[in-house]
Length: 397
Image 1 (cartoon, rainbow, N blue to C red):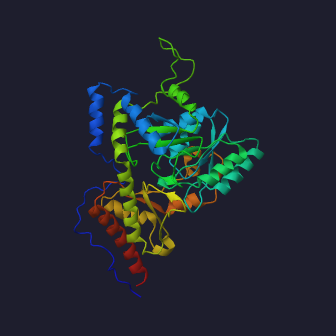
Image 2: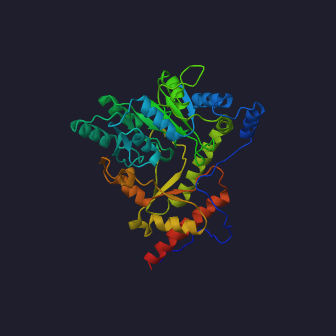
């Protein structure tokens, strides 16, 4: 039976201006703090704006220790050093993630061991994690750390992961780069593990243009992190270096931007969650289109809204929808390509159940910026509806 296209929105009335996946969203507060930094002529790394930004983050996340850095990647690198990871060690890492979660393991000459996802959150599977640890120990290699990721702002099953980690006495480094503002039973992501990592890259829920932060449960780790992040300069009146250090500290200007962004973070979360609700209300009527739901106790910042397309039901693939959006000058992106499928990590051990690969083939990140207008959201949905409706119509002629 032929079905009507009555639920497809007209798209001819929309302009063809670019709709970005997740663009920076500035407010007036950033400029105030930047002007303070300029007035003091303090623009270089560290400074009062960086101190203020760290205090803002500490209050917001209720973390004992926060060190602002130049990127989330640098925060992972420093955390692994502080956890004693060295060449020849193994570190367990979530496979479905951005490569920044895994690269710092290789920086240290260690080997990443990739663990696949579970269906509820798309994040590291605690059951598979336990099986992986048992197998690595049996092979004579007890992992030195575990890196779960809170993908797209959706909290992983971190309580279960922490239980497995405690069973085998392995520290946990939470990659919460995408999850500032997300909580599990009102506790901030990045504060469950021994260390947590945040990112303030240009596409994140708040940005410092580039930047990140290291959260530490043990406040004794803070001076060590600061020391390593500022070229490991010994406390002498001249430049002396006894250990390898890094140029990882955040600039005072970037800290000023961060202070202004923190003032509007609750509103940015509300706007991102509103985007998710809009997409879900508009697209859930299509069989074969699904969303990641919030489980009990979970609050997601909904950094990116991600849909999963089942081509066996919809008659179209994720790629068909992505290209249709691209044709209308709308940016979307496939779900992260799993690390165990990356050429760079082709030889790394991987414990897979096939889910991350299926998610890569069927998942699509939709435009989710907090500065999206209602017309832009309507335009995205109109193009998706048109593509899905066209497929359904022709499949039932």
